[in-house]
Length: 359
Image (cartoon, rainbow, N blue to C red; front, side, top):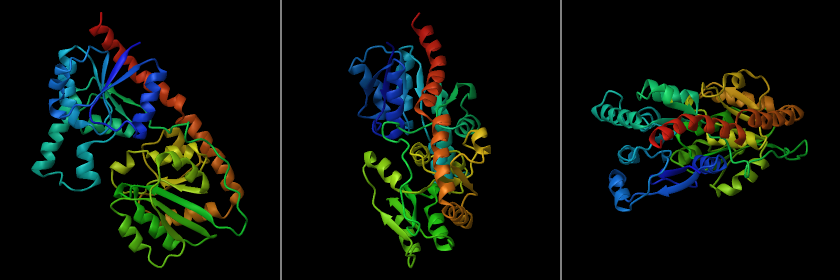
């Protein structure tokens, strides 16, 4: 049984990590953890703790700070290193948050630092093809070393469920949930609710984050908008199943076009239609399907979102069929078995490196 060491100060309960750790075990890997006290000195700590030689070092999502030390230790022991960044630190600070101007010295230093980290990895995982292209084009990663493994949803928690039974006069629920960051476009949701003209619906925004207060102020006077606080992850599936229409993301940045957020995977897995912004992150054949359970709107288009929700709310039978299509899309494109296949293929190249280091 090969052994993989997850290296870094990571969150094992984050959904991406939970899914991949389970799938690694399903594929016959033994998963061990190493959390250095100081990321930059992790290789020295590993030596002091006499960590035995393993088959693979895995640096999980968001842990750019752990890559340098992990790669030093991996190289000194002849072990390949896999990096699953999920996001780019440069992309987050420059494109998503706009905290740094791309031409500023700080942005250039951040880009140079991250490019060095990406070149240290023997295999890089990307959650979408668009992200894999970005890692290669912007961060200098070898595109042949980049493998796409979708995030997916935990099938033990998120599974198809019939649409809620409601009386004809009862309003449908449109549910947005998330961390209220610009990439998600919660302000677009509020503006869509203001412009909405159609059958009665209730717009629910669940979660907390930097834009929530702004959204609450923006929704003043809207009786069809309600807010709910965040709930435990294990209860999220049941909350999705109470709603009729789920909302994805509507941000206008380039980064927003490269991601498929957790909520889209989870909502499709629950058999709920999802209205979200059009993006190049989705499989080409899925983006071309007319009845996939995904309903596209242009990024940041509040009127387009209002119109699509009105269309869905006007025909409840068609909405039910769209929910069934959403479940089928999840099974076809993003199921646990599909993600496991992608992960297995990503590890094939790593296994060749393992055989080279373990003759």
